[in-house]
Length: 337
Image (cartoon, rainbow, N blue to C red; front, side):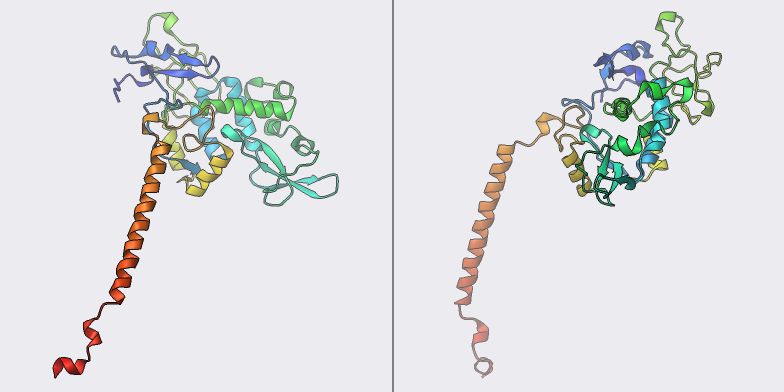
């Protein structure tokens, strides 16, 4: 609605670090675009509409596609290095952890938290349903497992072992990086810090001006030339430029429509919105379209009374019909005699 063709430069984006709207991309809008609308689908009064809920059967496939495409351009270099290595350390199902103080076996698996946050839990059964309530913690068995994918270090020479010395710190870093996906992101991968060669004023150039993502080695090459010269180009970790992230989910993962049971589970976890009350991210919500609970109650009460009256009248008519004589009660012999 009211789109002016300015691409990424037509919007202001929510800055999760500064907790405010960043209008900088609008400075680079082409063809005199002045709209600079908020990419606000995570707000209660958004003009965006919710198309549906979807789920991925394998969260590792989902994370792989998300990380190496848009994640490589939306996250900071430190976040991407950490998330890329930590992705491979998450459990892929209920697994054996060890024994508790009584010698009983314990198991561990991913434990969804409210607001879409990740955690790992200890359980007393092989399906990881029954929570363990004893004194042991996950870290007692697994250590700071999120560093296992990199041995405590990652790309760009980060020493994550010294940066995140406990599992709680590693989990906080993981969930903080995922905050980027709790706000609106376009399907088309982009890098808001990558501003091309279309502007002579150096003050208009972003910090990634003239740089591009160099193949699968995952680093910026300062001497390279941005051949396309387009604003906000995302050169991802799979050698794509501005790939359609939503298309990658469709083509490279097993994505399905969310079922009622899935939504009910998400509701109990507090990970959806409008249909699931939760602070922060909200998926669609125009208060003008929200049904009035009082009006809904009156409607159902009226419907119930009308149905009851209809059932009573049907019973009464049927009872009266049984008492009426019929043609077949007359002997056939008298009809043809």
